[in-house]
Image (cartoon, one colour):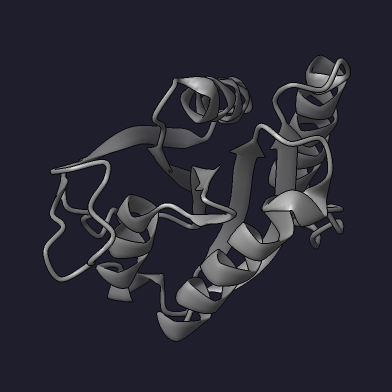
Length: 167
């Protein structure tokens, strides 16, 4: 199986989670690519004026992982722009994750994931798992470990069905 991980990370938090997932996928023998996108302007909210590099390309992956931080209680414009440029998600399985400063999902994480789920659905993708990582909580390490375990199970389940991964 091939896994494509696309992440927007302003502080490095999301990127560190993405690196963990990439390492797990590689260790399980999956062809894995990790791409960090960069917006032309982190403060630009108009997707028409925003550009990102690199522009997502069809990697022909079996599973896509998309991650980004919560920004103003929402998905970042950069990740929304990236997903909008991914028509190749049609029929593909997608895992979404977000990191947020606040300690509870409803403080931005839930809304961010809903926005990303809608964006992925508009491209024809199927979200198979979501996760919010609360960066300032004392149990952040345990949250990342739990997500890692669930992601590993998802990778293993590819041969015989998919386990559900909690959000």
